[in-house]
Length: 195
Image (cartoon, rainbow, N blue to C red; front, side):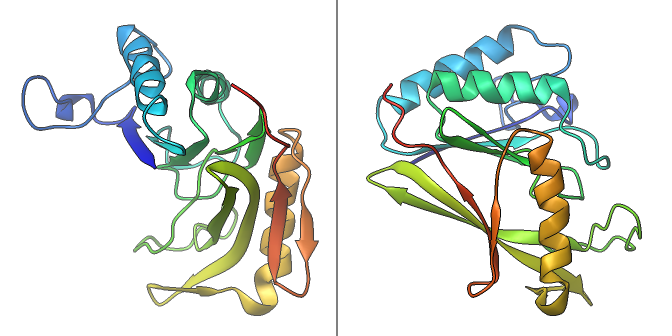
């Protein structure tokens, strides 16, 4: 398994011959996007399952920015099996592209922000990816709720939280279903897409 992480935040922390972050501007793309895609291609040649962690975008807003969607698709075409987005304090929808999941924002798992009653930064998920020989097959989302700085399974709020994710994902063309017995939202991933 391989993991590549980058951010489009904090350009002043960029590693430039020393310690720092892998800064890749998403909105005003430049050569660093091509460097990221080349790294994805090289890494995928050495691993079965490749996750790209994207710390991107503003802290709020539930829609997936078009620039993120474009880069996520390019990352998958280059070899990423999962694009795991984070940075916003709320969850965004999940898109399935070429049988691979793109989590545009996983939201907060634990935070110290006051709860925004509209955007609900206290709600998120445990994301569980099922694979078969390195091939993503199913993404299961178990709703969580932050209370007193502790993440817990959402209990009675689970279905409501899952319905919001279903709406956001549906806008991205992604179908999902609620598994009552398991208490999770299931997103099936397409059959093997040969690369």
